[in-house]
Length: 191
Image (tube, rainbow, N blue to C red; front, side, top):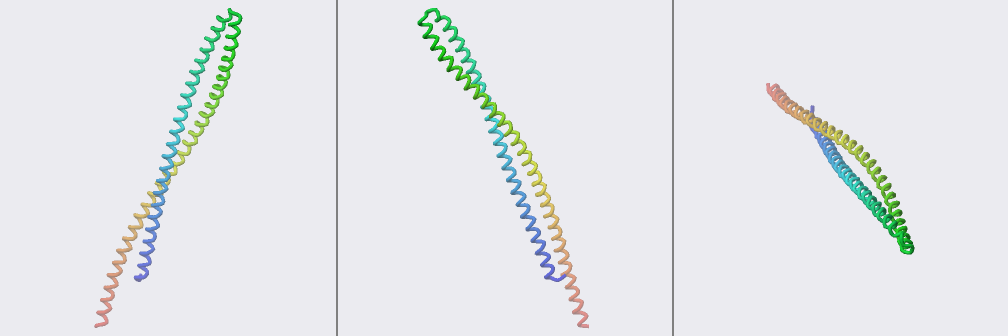
């Protein structure tokens, strides 16, 4: 093997090592990106969970408000019965309470509509949570594959370094043999 062939072989091995190191860097960057995406998905999931909790609290408050409204409506009805003894006074009170009742009915309708919307939002949040959980599982699988590729790349680098060391030793041995052959030829020429 000539020095030119040896240097070419050495250059090829160096290029392979550089290529493997670049692949390792790409795999590490992909793993870091996957980790960042995982963190973002976790953050989004936590935000969705807090939104669901807030909506549940709002539903509870709306239900409590509805109960209070119903209690007020009962009180208003009792007052209407007491006030019905006086004809003029009862008519005025009756109209006022009817208006108030209509407003409460409107408010109850509005609250029922909001409750329906809150339930839809909660269902959408559950769907988003399931989608996020699926995405997280996919990202974890991607991360695991990237880590396996990185590990494989590192083992290939170690193998290439070992081959390079063996080739270097072989080159040294060849140089020593060439020197011996050169000395032997010079001696045979002298005699």
